[in-house]
Image (spheres, rainbow, N blue to C red):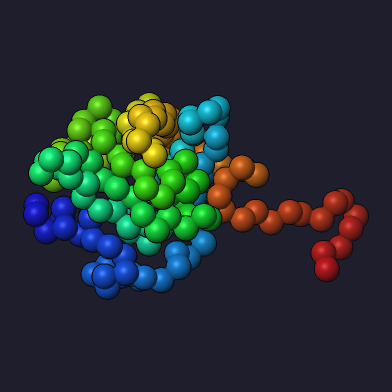
Length: 160
């Protein structure tokens, strides 16, 4: 279990994960903003491999105690950015569980993958912020998704 925790928190540029330190490939992610700090997300967008390639996840301690996970090195077009996270965010709770131990983090991830509504409490620039996600088994990637879309030529027109 400690090994999984370490891999979950390993910095991508440390060379510990496949593709570490490389720009993420264009992954088919499905994220749609549904209001301020509220998102509709396809479950495939929550793959830990996408996260590991999109940012660094660093244990954040206060007064010697683990209080959450700090996100750093978020690429602007990454799945993590599409989910509304910013560099420096400290994720303190996920799906109602405080991220204070490896066991809690794994339990929270399992709850997220079960679908439904997920609330994430973060601290951004010293201020608390609540992000809400509706996890769906699959949603179509629309124009607001972070993945590039290809437009079809109008009827009767030819593609260049």
